[in-house]
Length: 125
Image (cartoon, rainbow, N blue to C red; front, side, top):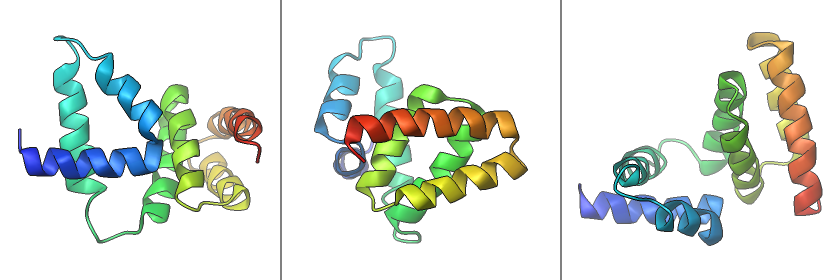
């Protein structure tokens, strides 16, 4: 593991998803899934999210679309909160999910809108 890239990724991950979410993911890791947490932190959050080529807001919108189409509700919830943190508005999230409806399928968008409404309510948005 590249410690510098891991530390960079940990900082980005915390900035986007929040300390509580990241602490829970890392502190509940065991010998079985700890390598995954390290991989995600180092490569996903450090090597990719840590790049300068796209702003975090854009990365968040891309993630919302891809995760919606992949039908990963747990990850979608986390990334909706992260998108709000990164400055993505409710209106922009609506537009992302409308795009998902056309290119990924209406059922993906229906579920994504439902999940987003639940997250907006929890976040007071």
